[in-house]
Length: 86
Image 1 (cartoon, one colour):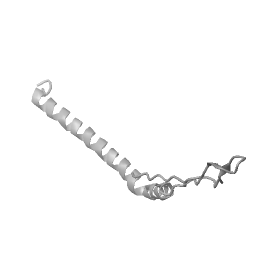
Image 2 (spheres, helix red, strand yellow):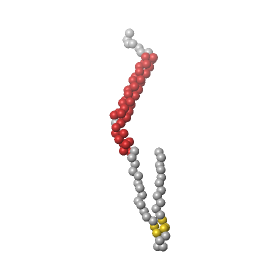
Image 3 (cartoon, helix red, strand yellow):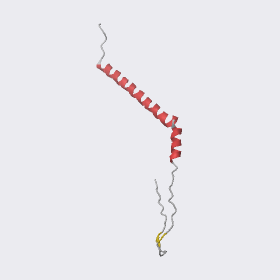
Image 4 (cartoon, helix red, strand yellow):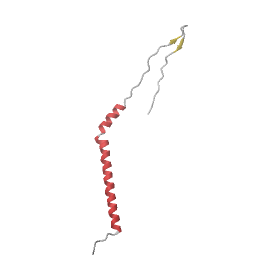
């Protein structure tokens, strides 16, 4: 006998196991990467969330009435308020 011959079925099984191993390593790598982002660095994202949840509200300056020379009111300051729901 010069050498053992491999059957095509054996070659296919080896390829499947190699592919399975590569896929398993990639899933483990992805899982570790996601764990690092969500769990290990989670406190920094929580700090960002707290900082971004507070919004500044601009209040317009208080203005008086505008009169003409006959002391009639031309323009008044009437406040308008809007509500934004998310």
